[in-house]
Each structure stands twice: as structure tokens, then as C-alpha cells.
Image 1 (cartoon, rainbow, N blue to C red):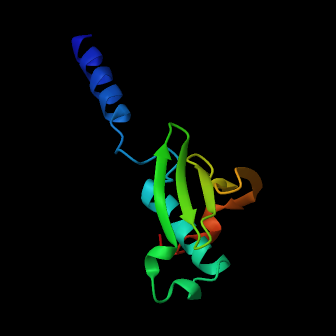
Image 2 (image 1 turned 30 degrees about the vertical axis):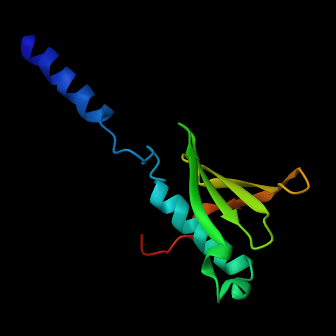
Length: 119
């Protein structure tokens, strides 16, 4: 009986020890960043930032238990917040124009469509 209790405790410990930044479904913070970075480079014109790459950026934002936030900043000052669901990869997009104090939901994408297929 004692061995059963110890085995169950060790199994529970093993199952609960998850790597930080990873979800149970396999969407990691690195995957979220890579997929959104790929999306932004294929859907926005980066030529304006050729001489000054810091004009347009993709950065990681806050993380919750269910989502990663990735932020795209355009040369215009507009921000697009990508909220990546850790379980499904479904990503909702919210555009924010701070100068005009305007936020709007602009759609959804599937993160998996923008990840390198070698993963």
C-alpha cells in the first residue's frame, strides 16, 4: 500500500511539472511569437522600415493561463494585439490606434497556418 501511495505521488508530481511558457496542447510562447511574426511579415508592408527596422516591431506581451499576447507595432503608431489561445492556436486580433483612442476587433487567424511546417 505504501508503494502505491508513493507511486501515485510521484506520478502526480511528474504530470504537474510543466515547462514555463508551454501549454498542455503544445502551443508555446516561441510558437506564438514565430507564427505572429510570420503573419505580420507576410501581411504588412515592411519596406518602409528597411532603413530603420525599429519602426515596426513584433514583441511578446502579457501571458495568461489560456493565452499568449503578441504585439505588432506599425510605423504609423497603430498596434495590433494578437491573442493566441494556448489550447487551439486560434488567434483573435484587436487593432488599437492610440492617437485616436480607437480599438477594434479585426478578425481571427489560425496560428498553425503561419508556423514552419518542420515543427
